Length: 468
Image 1 (tube, rainbow, N blue to C red):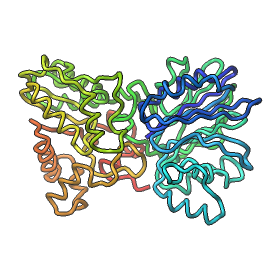
Image 2 (image 1 turned 180 degrees about the vertical axis):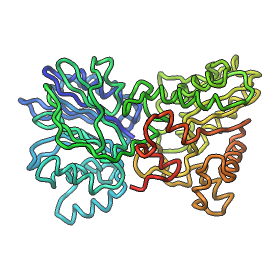
Image 3 (image 1 turned 30 degrees about the horizontal axis):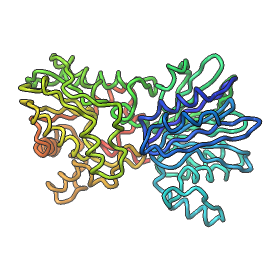
Image 4 (image 1 turned 90 degrees about the vertical axis):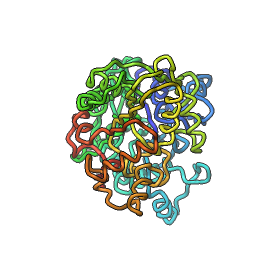
């Protein structure tokens, strides 16, 4: 995944840029980058590897080199960014939150036109540079960005720092968000609205799908109107969104809380308490406790000072280690208790299986798991929110293969809540993870909690519905 922040100010932008970008750190920990534009010095750029440290510690000591009133920053789990380009459109820096699934095809197409790639990432083409090269094929920035929309498969939202402000363009189907913020002396633009409050920005507007705007210190100019069709990712609210953030006017924590409450109201399991698995399961757990009518207790807590998000490491065994080390069980609360635990999702199930084992070892009498979204049946071809390489890494597909002899058979039936196939799959997941019981949120309840029409929300990973 990834997140970006940009600002155009009447004064120096550096402090806002630094902290605003840092507030996207929950979206990735592979690389970070900043770029500013100063009318006297031109473009200033720095990129750091974040795999062994945090954004703030990497960039804080070098902030003095940045000057100017406009800048963009990125936290990325993909390529080194920003890319700085000199072209017939002028000089510009660009950051993207993107997943380009036809990267190789587009690379060959551009090479055949005698273009070249200078920014290789671990020997592979840097997808942000590829996007920049697609842009400069246009006669204008708008035409170039539309070329990106038309050419790539996957998704792409971007910020372009120019000598005349920042151009922000949201993915053509709005799979990833862009939010505009405003204060007296500046405009800001970000993937995550939690970047705004402590920097005194108020949310001004949400960009629509495919919408393109130019931000200057004194206003926002629309360069392309939004598309009607939208497929905003439902996993924004389920998993990787920060609790304070809002997308399409719907707050992440509120959606999780409402979703948990609705699930809890339908649950008659006899338990002593409810606990949310930190961090993304907490909002759901608080709502669930209210809905089912039992106390919420912190039977497991997250050690935040040193452990990053568990999806970041490339090796599965390291991800499992991180997941284990960052969550600390509380024997005083667990011992002898029947407990419902709320979590965002189950991907492979390895982390959850290990957690369940520990919870029983620490004295839990029963461990019931409640998941904030439906079962993940399909891998996501649009956004890189997990490190999964194939659909067979999903525990659901492994079980479907065991049951059907073919991991692709009857997927629509397994994706249908309370069908015979669905119930058998859920029962086997619970058995493998050694849970006392397991329930997933229904797609209908999740959409109701998000509060947008189903046709505006991408639920492909649950039902395979988005074919764009």
